[in-house]
Image (tube, rainbow, N blue to C red; front, side, top):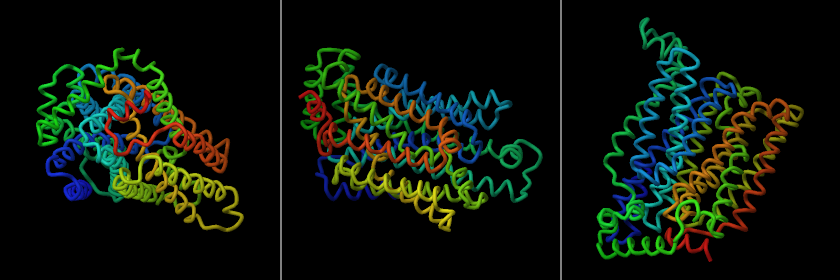
Length: 467
């Protein structure tokens, strides 16, 4: 709420009165709620079970969801596809809380994973298509902020439920006691159903993406929405005309358009930065943080509390990134942030190699991790969804984002499965050293191959790729 108000106040100070920034912020916040569910569903496992397949089963669902998200959104619209994701999240939360076997639990975790995969594509895509150009970066970043709030929410709920379960409180011998005391993991997973139901309800209060409506030749509906956004029918008509003109220049349809030289280059770059970003360590920390902290000498009883600190730094840093991304630009945030990530990862690796021998207290490791999370949150985490939502032509944006998102979730799945193995066989020092090395090609790709997109309309960005 504080973030939304600050964006609104800042925008009103800077934006012309002919633009209804408050309405655009509302649309963006509603879509960004999908990010909260993404973050919660992804992070809630940190307080339950640390076994690789249990982490991986939801990621399998995410891969399935992201594979179908683009096709569904291009055919049925962004709004209906978000409704589908809300239904999947609700079913997952309720199903996990009430599951009667491991097989049922895995099934409902996969259902939630499909919801994650769908919303990870559609929410930022929708925001980018309704956003006013000068504020698109920070508005799309609301989605990443919502993810971090979801992570923090999961950590806090896990921590609090564990405190309740360990306090000896009696909730009777019925279902409540089973969910919140005897098998507290049920409560952790089931709490997701509450924000999922809220997401389902509020989606009905937002319109379809105007750009999708134009692609489907529903110009009158698009004009009505854009008129409400720009408070000027002539400006709205100009926006409709710009989109139609760009669509007319794209004679090919769907998959053929993606193989045009400029668009294919954008697609390959998007795939590369999506998958490389997962091998730079952040998800290893977010998924297995409590285990890493406990094994490093930090109190095992407090390891989940330390994960709460990680989530808090992640969220607050994302607020910082959100406020400066349109002013500083996407590329500079990556340069500065990834440099800091490399340094902090090297320090983490050094601690695992020499920390005990040199008598360095374990709390120093926590500081290194928090610095790493700060650098990551202010750069690649804030920038990736903005770039992916901007890079592709309107007519195939859903499919193109699905392909890039598919590679992102493949990388996430591999990290989820490989991190326990790497920590055991490569040692923690080798694991974090590898993460530092993987930062280098990422920043080189951004530096050499990705144009700066801050302050440019989606149609201008599209033309940049086909020059």
